Image (cartoon, rainbow, N blue to C red; front, side):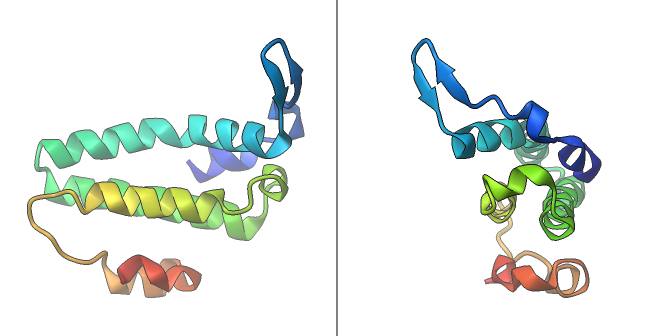
Amino acid sequence: MSLALQALDLDDLDAGPRPGGYVEPSEAAWNVIEKVVTPYFHDLERRVKLRHENEALEVCKGVVLGLYRAKHRGFELLEYAEDSPSELASHAVEIWRRRPRHCTFPRNFVEKYTPNWAWLVR
């Protein structure tokens, strides 16, 4: 997913006047980023519903790590939607927490791979 996000550039930004009104660059950037991430959210939700605990955790970690890398490697669209990686990572963790067995997101993963997002384990 990280590579798919980094492959996005300003040509993918569909902002400007539309028949129904004007699409702001920030809204357009969010839309493009969400299109990349949404299939991973669906996969995570499916694994949570099936109670595939280990698989759900690995998918969630992959989503969080991909978003973290995209944010910290700085891709062009982030200048229009700079909060999107952290907000979408938070959403992935929220989906993962819907499992019947409640626990916090793995602290050791966050400390090692996403140290600037310590809030994920709170």
